Length: 463
Image 1 (cartoon, one colour):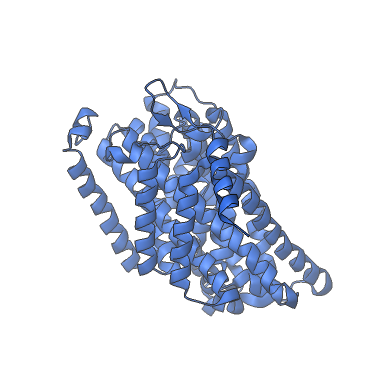
Image 2 (cartoon, rainbow, N blue to C red; image 1 turned 90 degrees about the horizontal axis):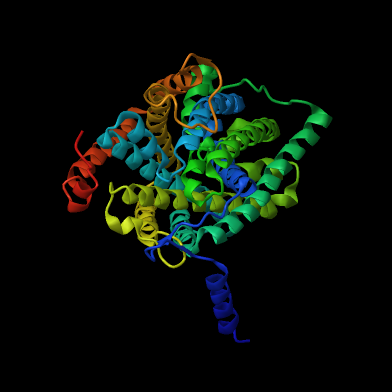
């Protein structure tokens, strides 16, 4: 059978199907294709795949059976900062969201650049982290090299990122439904065991009886599980009625994901205990297979969709942050060039290349930890931005407003800032040193780029 013809027909179908928008100057721009349903699934998809499937075993190794409490702690931190994102996104519905929030709040382009830099790095390293999670499940089924499988996944997903947001959104919707079904299977199996035997493990047991210390240490790692709620705002320029839709999608995504996380964590540790979870490279498959021995292949296949979906969205987000910063003349012009498919292809390529290089050098725990510490620094800046803007621009239009205020002052934003700050003390020193290097590199990049003619034209000053 001649397979070439169907493949080319599919290619041209995608080409014609994707309706590229142009502005008056004839340049291509991002297309607003996402509604509340798509954006909420977008958020749930990236949140769920990131932590439960890829890192629950790592978290269990630190917090023991009490890992579910670490998910609760992480949810609280995410909720504080997520509400700040919701209000800020209703004020500035743009890509490179954190960069724009910081720039408008403090009028310091150097600070805004470093925040945008950290978000770009966090998105790329996070994509690599989840790619390792995918590779763990893949090699559990088929064998092979975890690193090579992760590299291959990054390359394939980067091509899908290039094809366009509409096609990526379809893959996201399919994968989100599949990965959510997988988590529901874990919960159902856990409920089945609970109904017959009850809770068979001590849900508060921690390694070495370390207690709250180990739970907080695990929170610093598995906060990666909530990675994604902040990335919803970076799809603002591709969302219909973004000022209202983005905040709603953000809040709904956090609520649904938190409920699923807690139920899955309790079920998993009750099924096999934290020791087996921490030693497995396919932890949820291990949990389900303990009760349903023939489910190994099927559940690992579900996990592949979950992790691939999250990695794809993170690659998309990383390229869109570069696009947004370039559009504001903070990055080289090439990153803001949008091709016929409606995607910033130079930014897509740059993110793909860096992701592959990091994949060849990293491992899942280190990559996840670097991502988390970068995000906590960014969350400090985001919450501080909301506080500053409440006083700098009190009359600005806000389609969403964070509750619990003392006058203009947002109390929850302060709690988000403080919780993110204190979590920085639960990271290992060598990881903190790597993060310091990343931040310094961001300032160096800013000093170099601000001297370019493009940056000068955009008034990228060294404030």
